[in-house]
Length: 409
Ligand SMILES: Cc1cc2nc3c(=O)[nH]c(=O)nc-3n(C[C@H](O)[C@H](O)[C@H](O)COP(=O)(O)OP(=O)(O)OC[C@H]3O[C@@H](n4cnc5c(N)ncnc54)[C@H](O)[C@@H]3O)c2cc1C
Image 1 (cartoon, rainbow, N blue to C red):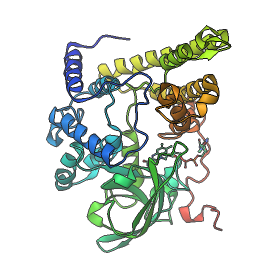
Image 2: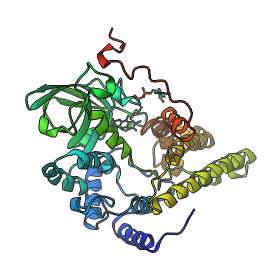
Image 3: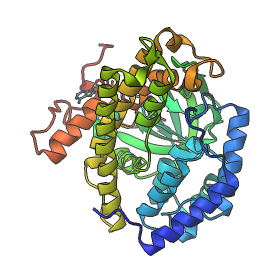
Image 4: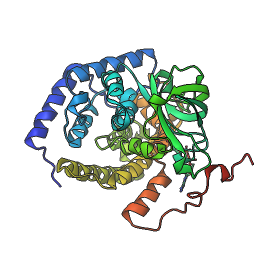
């Protein structure tokens, strides 16, 4: 492992630090990092910050220069993310568009389409969302049922997507749909991008336990998409979808909050049996256990960074990192709530200790064990691709999609 930045990496880190110091607010300790709601004001703040980042040349770092990028190796994006972690910088709104949708466009869209869409996405003027998951197709995206029927140069879309993050403020979306139900599931899919303001699209926010509505149900009734907005060949949508999924963000620089430092702050600030909770042996033991896990994750991150710095592709340790991180976050939040006792039921940021950071994390943490691959799917990946264990049983692989048993028959 190599813990030091190269000269070039150190110079870039300094450039990022100077930009952030001039354009963003440092995160305050004990304050939740993300806004609970993305309202009009939060969206406008995020767009202004993205424009400033763009003008400073700090967006699309790994992208081709032709499309506004800097053609830097992936390690530079990791360095940027690491530095941004210390600031309350609103980047979430653009993560899916710039991380997944536009890279898919770059692989399949025409040069004219790229000229039209990429610059505005990069500068944050237009927001994109990813319409993959459906009630019957999440981990198994190839099982989607939303239908696409062709009439000449136009397609008609009918069906439903779910869990679509940011659909309520997105301008465009990418979607995978079923264009041929007579062939096995992976072979009958096609892939499109579309205007989210098209007639026939209805977006219904889903209310989460925290009170926020980050994601939505999206209904399609006779929505028309020109054939020119198809990405990839008819029936080859699965291949295009894999391009999107391979671009899921490398969350290497991220340390989810609250972490053990926050737990320590909490244990020092509240009392248990008439003395600071930090003096209690079992509290100390639990925090020590969390600290060990945090350190394990930190050095695993360094391993991945070393690989990236050497121009290698990171190995399956990123799946391990996500699996352990998500469970740890939930455990830390839950232990924080135990320490808070009845005070843990207060959600008001102005009244609750540490601005209700543990309460918020407890409500949000189950999502991190689902989004971007559930715990079980990640375990399957580790089992099959790291440990070489026999593959999951896939009985429906070769059967025409419309002959698979469904609840409707
Ligand atoms: C915060 C958040 C944001 C999201 N944003 C988006 C978005 O923007 N766009 C989008 O398209 N989707 C989005 N999703 C959806 C997400 O991709 C799916 O929720 C996820 O892939 C799981 O699919 P599912 O919910 O249908 O669960 P299912 O796939 O139905 O899984 C149900 C349970 O069965 C288990 N399971 C499934 N298959 C197997 C297997 N083969 N072996 C063992 N266990 C299995 C799962 O682990 C899980 O516990 C988001 C989800 C979250 C939580």
